[in-house]
Length: 230
Length: 230
DNA sequence: TAGATTGTTAATCGATTAACAATC
DNA sequence: TAGATTGTTAATCGATTAACAATC
Image (cartoon, rainbow over all chains, first blue to last red; front, side, top):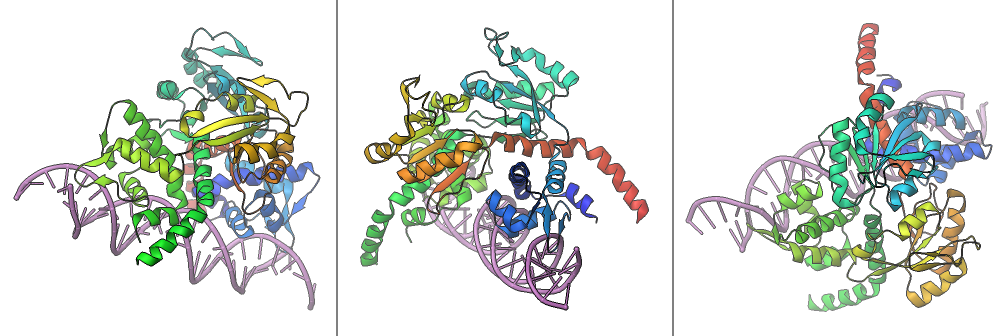
């Protein structure tokens, strides 16, 4: 099987999830005028081990030169291609509360392969207001966005209690990729892909480790007690 | 080894990462007045398989009743305890741009075990302004926040180019858990835990799958060609 | 050629899953 | 007791890692 076909067949999920990080590191290197990089250097810049990096890249094909390293521009191009970022994906953000407006103003989407083409809100009283250059549109516009503007990705930035309803709207309109910022599980058909970002969840994971850290002295003490009991 | 000790020793990372989701589902069940739940029902609510749920919970201890299920309040309490959420963790948010202000106004932190005690910004010209109830403070206040208010968790909501500098400030002040929203890798000492949330990365992962989906027809065609070539 | 670094192999590790004995 | 559901076991699967042959 050619590397090309291998790339399209099955890149492991864990590898796919790291490709954006490599791309980011490569972009940063390119901006600093660096044109060639070893797996060791790139891995350090991306915060992974070099073995993991080389294994991940091997799923894409063979774009390095033994004894030399990788050409920064070439590798960035190959990763972009693998991720499907040669086109700019149209994105709509639903829910124009604090978070939705912050996302609408975020420049990082535009520079990394996405084009925020529409902002929407269920609340008719905010429809018509503008956030930056874009007007807030009603949910009823979703169908036209999918048909006419090839909208493929929807971002849900509503409170949890309206997220499922918004997801239903998106799915009915034909959107099959959803990024969900609401702290809830969405029920969608099997062919719709949902990824979730939950800031409180991330903090809770940090809290678990922080607690464990500060609990170490207590733990040592209670282990002693147990030692006696046994 | 008692379940209690097992819980403190090693809960697998993958399990820890799912506990907040279970807690959320339990909270939602409790709000709807449901007091008892089976692993099958809770797993469905949290979007995982029941086998995975039971395995995860088994690392915490044995809090279910065979033939009956789990008491919602009890299990929520046990998960909260395991995650270290019996206390409210003081959090500071650094970077008062669009995202930082959105996070500062987000009520989800307060309800899920955290207390945003301070907002900071490197830019002296915005220091003194208020976001909601809290004033924006200078970076120099970090030391006092750690010492006097037991600040343990810092959230970085700055652009990528100032994130490392902010991380250095946090680490110097004694913060050892960081949630990073800036699209860059932070270089911190080994005992500092960093979790990263990158919205563009999430979209890129969605794009990969979306691209694969729309590319399926092409792929089938090229496979035919290859069949001939072989 | 000698030195360097990739791409791959094989071993290890951790996570998931299905099945079921334990037991309410 | 009979029915239901947990907690655990063992098998499987996927991801990580270290080492090194291939090769520039």
